Image 1: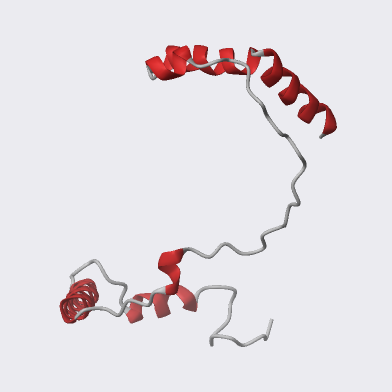
Image 2: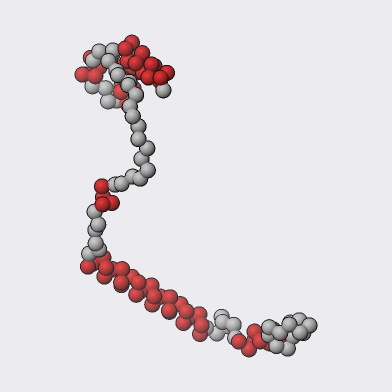
Amino acid sequence: MTALRARVEAGANSGALGNAIKTEAKNQGVLTDAMNSADPIMVVSADAMTTKKVDTLVFASASKKKDLSDGEIAAIVICSMIFAAGVIYAIMMNAGGEGESVKGDSVEDALDGVGGHDDYGANDV
């Protein structure tokens, strides 16, 4: 950190830092007449500051608790009801279609010939 502090102070005292700032401002199109006419030599104090580790960030808006309005609650209830109705409709349509669903008898018939077992779940080999 000491080397960085020394470089900043040297650049400011020689005018290199001020000229670099002016050049970048000109390149970005934000150079003003006051900045352009300012002395590039600056007095900079790059003293080390005490730092503190921040464990948790707290945003100002997080401390305010905002309840839902009546309209927001109604919208949530209505959308939930529409979603539930759609799920029930989809289940009913898939359960009653011809050729779409698997009949219990066909499953039993297919399992009867598997492994020579005559009942399901028996371990007699």
